[in-house]
Length: 369
Ligand code: UD1
Ligand code: UDP
Image (cartoon, rainbow, N blue to C red; front, side):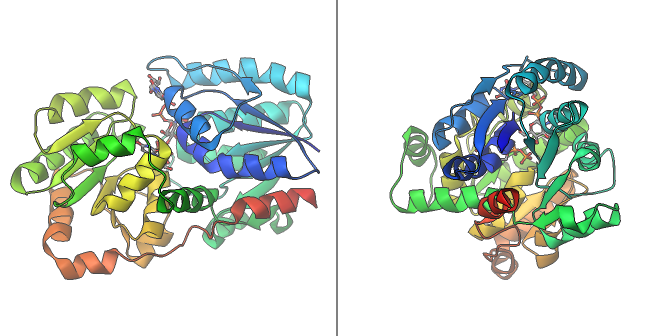
């Protein structure tokens, strides 16, 4: 079977890495990897760590790209790759512009499509934007649906997708996380980790922050930054914030938070350094999808700066709390975690609602059969 694995952003690369390696180990597949490079630097960091050399690199990223430009460039360039390689199956991941456009392009060429991380839903098309609609469109297009949890399978069944084409696999993010955590436990270290060790005072509580959602641009980011400044100015803590390279994020974050001595604004971390940083943090404030899935496995409480989540499992278990973007809510929730040990302990509980590290093997086995 000729298999084309397509991805383009940091989180897709992290979540497809274990699959690429598993497929390459199987004699049943001729595997080619196509990166759109919707992200450039943040994608390359992941490819390096997981030792993946793409067969095709569309190299489409432009600074401050719009969604429509992005779609246009991917459609134009992916067509030639599919024309040349003639895959039997195309695999896409999740909810990005890369995944939806690659799935759609494959459909136009009558090629079967498998969707990894299928079935996540908020049913609010503006939150997350544009990811919720990307997911729904991709589900309509795809032939095979690899759902990470039983809830995501139920969402797909409710949309009349046949159960014979849905497989609950767990999330491949946990495959990558466990593999990387084991490497760290065995003493893996790199330059970024060494730098973090000298930058941060780990005798203090360290809060790790990330943020990049389009629906939070503008007011949302201003309000989140205001809360972070307040927390830093009123507590003897350290805040470390690897700032996403999107200029819409860089500008407000740099303007509002540089110059506060216990807020460390740093470049995006490579994946193992970020996992190391999660392990060392007291808790995490984020709007990231992937981090919401990883942190529960590491026993780290998460405050999610979003109004909705398509990942309800850890919210129900009480280790992730949706705080939205209101400064007051973020400050109250974070201050409570800093001050109230009982409440902190209830949230700092390691559990694995998103997978057991064997998702990639299940997907490979399904397609082998
Ligand atoms: C994209 C995905 C989002 C995903 C996120 C993960 C879409 C519509 N959005 O959002 O679902 O959660 O990635 O991070 O698919 N940039 C760089 N270097 C990089 C990466 C980004 O300079 O390595 C800058 C560029 O100026 C680029 C901008 O960030 O134009 C936006 O990148 P884009 O992929 O369009 O949006 P993200 O916010 O990263
Ligand atoms: N991550 C990373 N370096 C960072 C921040 C995040 O490697 O500086 C990883 C994180 O562990 C997770 C993924 O990137 O696996 C999440 O990516 P992001 O938040 O950009 O996208 P989302 O998951 O929200 O789509």
